[in-house]
Image (cartoon, rainbow, N blue to C red; front, side, top):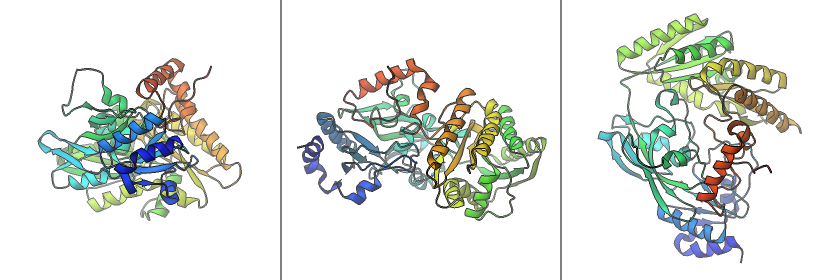
Length: 461
């Protein structure tokens, strides 16, 4: 009997038909939304509680069977790609909102709760959860990848908004990290260790989240530019003067063309474009809008338009969240590789303008979109169906990431490492830092069952 068969035999009484070996179910769990090759797991197990996750990990650790946690399946760097004879552990049925502490602006949820579901639950409380990476992301997965998104420029990433976690370790032990307090000076910060660990150190099953009050007023503005450089410099100036912007997004003219066609945006030219959002009291929002309009004018902006109409705001941000699908529709029969470079804000113009040259020289189509207030931007490199298409796209990706690293940046601002960014880890962090990361991995997961092969490249002798 194989190790996998032993695990499934031991767990069959607890899980019953929540263990699936059907091809369709395994195929669904064989990949995320990235470009990396899929791999069918040996089996899929649907857990419904922390205790059940613990039972799975105890058995897998005993027999040496790999386990990869699966939530919404929206990751872009191969985080949820399983191993052939391993288990895909699906947490999407863990959807309880365990507690809401409205007076303290926090709540506790299970890992399978999506950000959409949480905000629907909070709708009548005057509170919301702001971290917004797009898609049907689960909050456990968002913690595992240290996700952020369009609102991070004001509200921060999952690192700032996760107060504590429940984590199941490789041997099945259950620990709770952090708590409900806003600060603590006790012990090692295990919460931050697991945030962004991509399921390689433990599996997150519950999250204590920081909530925020809904802004009294929200206004949206759009401005277009003849030159990409002027649009990026607008973002840099905005951050350098400390304007408390709610969201600030850049779309180059290629991305804007794709969005106009896919999302049926009207009234816009095919030009580099900035989307802005302002949060606060009415007087504060008016002041922010006026300041932004002056900054835009200083950088040759065209037709600064703003509105506090909710329907117009939702239409605009829906188009922004659909950029990946707009890109795929822009060039049918192409695949998409989403890059994720980030640099200090002062280096952002050099990075984006230089990357635009790299794209033009490559001959590929690669729309640019970015959370430019964070110094973070993406290109969706559209991979042509030719035999050398993928290698040409990956070569362009390496150029863009290399440019970011040379400017003091990182290979990922929010998508994480997974399989897709492992090759850049030593250049970014250095060999000694990677050795320390490997020591942590060996301490938490000595039998290497948790998401093996992800994040950390093999050591070079």
